[in-house]
Image (cartoon, rainbow, N blue to C red; front, side, top):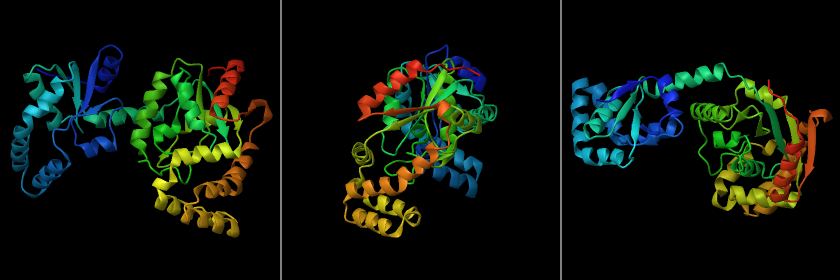
Length: 348
């Protein structure tokens, strides 16, 4: 028989036991928000879930259950096989720890797969996450990477993270690049997903003496950075990276691939067009319309993004500021490593 476990027990198990977290909700629900590290083996697909919900509301609970049994019966071998292929214990969950997770856990347990069911489902995990955000205390020093737009800051941080540096990739957690064009080619995360991923990553880095992150505003796409992290970022050591504009234009074109997202680029530009001197704005729009993306990016950097960055850079005192110059991403990574080796950090 499967076992019910609380969210506290699940978090304790994660450090001691090898198992797979399985979200048995529909793919749409899984995409909206899940527990970090989970996989999706849905009991019902999106269409089936909608159908059962309609029957539940318009006919009766019993009729909805009967239709659910009919759907599950038809796909039972495939459903169980997906769990058997995991070759390890599983923890299943749904929205509230109700019928879907109970049915799933019962079925796979009968077929020899040892299962746990999360009490309260993902709702209990969200409640736990909110409590963690509300009581968040950042004990590490923040070392913050600033730089002109296009300096490849995110890729630099990811490179450092791959080498073991304690990086919090805020743009990655938000799945948004942080600018007005930041959503192009991406599906921005909602606040629930961002919060879950942030707490997950902060937990992994709790033993580090500092956190390395990119300079971000309070809002990144659809999400808001928690106030304690924002305050620690603002009070942190600020690294300002300078890189040639030609290199930055190249990075932006490689990252955004505007030729693949032509209409999105035009629409995003309309949101900032009025903030740019009219003749320059007209020239940028002309180049975008005619797919002369390199020229458009040059003008956007020179007349919009670079002045914004320069105003922001003046807000920090010299005593907590480090200025680095690099010709490209490779030399930037080396320069930042050298700077980090010289920084004396403190914990709070």
